[in-house]
Image (cartoon, rainbow, N blue to C red):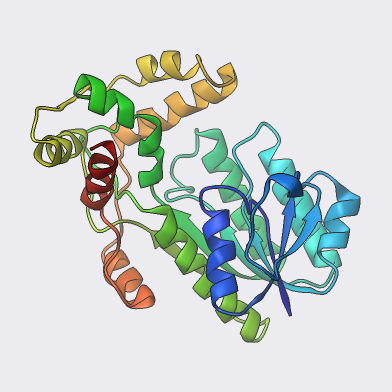
Length: 290
């Protein structure tokens, strides 16, 4: 049976598609612009998005399992609710949903609250689901690497509580493993929640120290300034989204993104290898920069 992947061209989704294809799964993707998408041979492409009901219904034809990833947008919750309703109409019960760590605690941050709402919908509508809750994406750092390299400042206000940063490739591989397990198992498997974290929980000072060590020159932490983060973000994203990023940064500072005991061993066992580290990312960036 076919696995439908949404968000298939993004940082996580494209890796999910490749992981599934490598495992021999029948994969279909829903994407707005198939001409701009590059997928492995054999992957079926349906043009459309999560608000295009005709395309969504067509995409679910013959599907057994859904990977639901929808981006942070003003209508994110509507997209999730419509997709899950159409999935249920099509008889799809198996879902792997990409949520976010502490979705039940960061209740004032809109996209966290949205994802917690979708989690509750999965439970109350009787889906057989795996809920994946990733922490801060290591891949976010591509946005600020030039600031670090050129100015010696780590600018993200991640605070002093610590974030268990996780690599998008690890997220995708766990998602693929769970999609295969769900698709091959009975549709009565219970709902499970998996925190997706990296091997280390790092503060702003920790991250600056890693950059300093790898680059061989000083890098300082820019400090806990969510308001300044909002101001900078408003230069390249809508004001509502910049404000939402500020709200999230405030929770990084006050709460952090802390894994539960056993999260790292569970993921290591599931993947059969060590988790990718933040230091490894920094080494890759430094090598590419020459």
